[in-house]
Length: 316
Image (cartoon, rainbow, N blue to C red; front, side):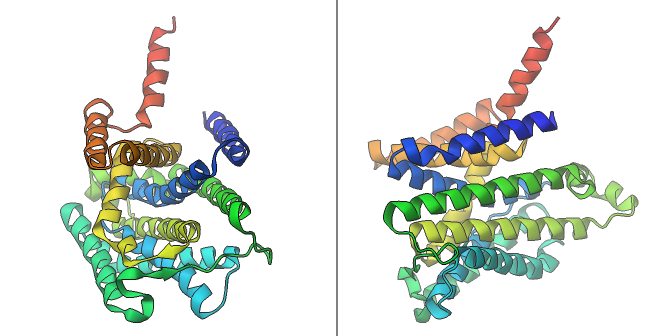
């Protein structure tokens, strides 16, 4: 099953990589944002498996985005492989520091405390004129090993970069889920005391999950900033975190691929809902979430499991 999933994922990656040749530019841009945001969702899935829901992932998303923007603005560093890496590491460092406190809390206390840190960053950015205050500032066009693409070629280059980082992250997170630390997520969610009796520090495991989720959030924010070409404090606002949680519920925690599929479905539904009914697009998104909870409580990722279970039942 593992090799079959890897093969299907590789085929999906190759098909997605050919999108710029047959899809319009607006759809390529939409997929770039969707897959960049999916990295944040993937981090939420890691924590959700352990029973933790964070309403503050926008904090790491914003840290990654502003790191990329400030490196170009203040240091003149535009090499995309350097800025994106530093954006992810900066967010991971913030997650590591905050993790010493966050790892001690569970349930609603964890959710609200993570949200509080995100809103603190939002308030700091809004009050800091040097960082653009409420308007934010633009991101300098990136370079790829010295090559500076423009217009359509820049869009395609960023899309392929996002795909490559998503594929690498999916493989690494899949390997993490198969490791001992990743497999202990469900036991932690069900009964922490029993895990502690095994000689494992639950707080340390949760701290590791927070750092991984923070790094993924930083990568997502860095890639989104490069794609949009602008950063502003709303990247740290609570509605941004709420959007990531929305996609996580839509996708489910059943598989790594579900995070990317759910994020793409969310962006497509939101874009078409806003285009068709600009005054009621939130109602459409809310209806989609309601239907998902009613008929697919485990998210879109459960569809594959249901089909597989039905096939096994029908087999003689």
